[in-house]
Image (tube, rainbow, N blue to C red; front, top):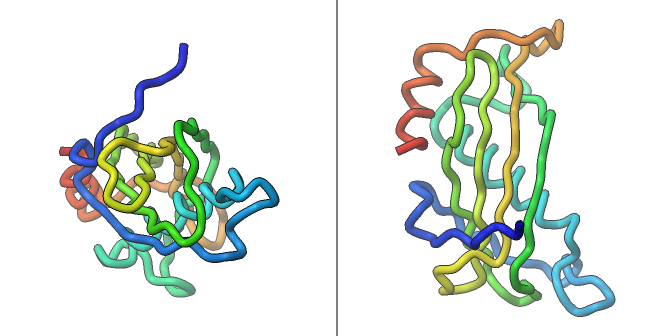
Length: 143
């Protein structure tokens, strides 16, 4: 069964990402693989802005273990993408993020998906328990 596109107001965090000429494929729209770059960008930018990730210095990092995306309508350069983000599930060492991608000023998703991070020790790559600070911050993203 095909999912229903979400609306922008169902995501507590928004980030505007401009498309690039190079994002378009030969069919004249953003290539499907680029949508995963948008997912990665909104999640990691949110982590950095909330002081949960410091590139090259964090002792705990998130490794992507699963992603998916459903496409509803085309995005093309020179559109702006508004990426909506929410935390759908916060586990003991993992987080399932849900992302909606919205074209320009549209309020119905052009695409939406999920992005699962398992948080691990940066050196050993073994899962670690999500810290109290991180859990508290993520819970605000789940509201």
